[in-house]
Image (cartoon, rainbow, N blue to C red):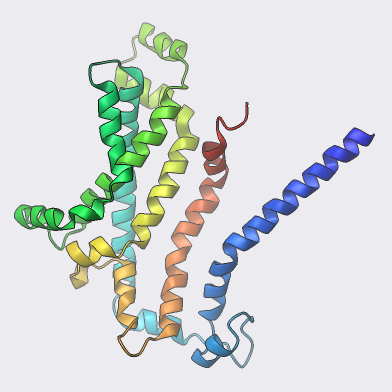
Length: 279
């Protein structure tokens, strides 16, 4: 009886800690969303209070939807992010499978070379990247952003996925080879389903920097037809005057995709982060 009570107590404590951490993590997001529905005066006078009859206002959302082309910016961000995620997960998983499965000269050096991208920021090569895109005729195209973000996300993807690939049973893969499966079918049918938590982890950690990035859209795709949501939101931020209603409204709308993705993949994300931590 005492052990059962102790187990229940630990479970309650764990849930309380989880709820507390969730509230702390979501508190800035909640504040931004609350203030996006307020008047300018209420944002500064009552930043932590809920909107009420006197402070409620949709001015920010009306401004966002009428000034500029919000839906085009959102579409550009969505296309660039999804295309980059697809390339990072596909090519990263294939490279990780090759490094984990096959032994060849330079295997370790190749892994270290790919991991260097984690330690060296890609922004250091901005000038060279811009010159390359100009020479290729890709400036002011979504393709330029997809290529840069794919290169940015591959090192982390290979580093994480290669460790999970090594944990996949060799007997399972050898059984597939005995049954006549090609290496591609072994990869797509046997290996990928077993590393889905790791794929979800890589997807979430790759999505957030891409969706929130301002640097490369400003450098490589500043044209009106290729602006991303983050770059398009800068129109409301001036040198002397800032439309805080519109800024908070655009930030609230920009948060939604990342928040939805996290909620969808949260279970697999947690499994991917904690896998191997407890034996």
